[in-house]
Length: 151
Image 1 (spheres, one colour):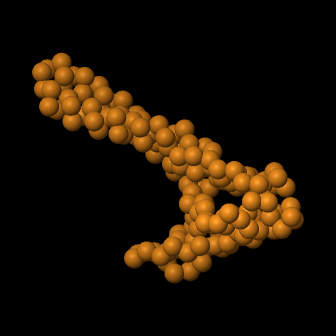
Image 2 (image 1 turned 90 degrees about the vertical axis):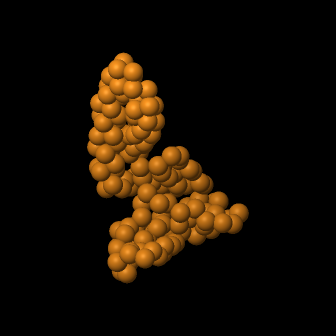
């Protein structure tokens, strides 16, 4: 079983930890504001603490598992909010999808299930300004080789 992790995990994990730390510091300020009778400030602060804490918790918990694992049995992808698994028999093709934007384009590995539709692996995307991402191309070639070898 091969595993590929995204380098962005090294960014998302500390970012989530910083957001959690800021949420704790702000929570102390919310408690102090509520103790002084400033309920409007405390209510707005509480909403911000909840949002920052939730985002920080998701990033801190999920960042270490971002990536893809594949082998003879199939492929498992762990993204931001959930993980998905496919048997190679359920995958018709692995290809590179290009998502274009105004400032840059993004190469995204894409699984094409035999049942139809597509499943883009966004956490493994590569970003550039009009050129293809070699890392994404190598990953797609490896996944396609593993799929054909398992067939």
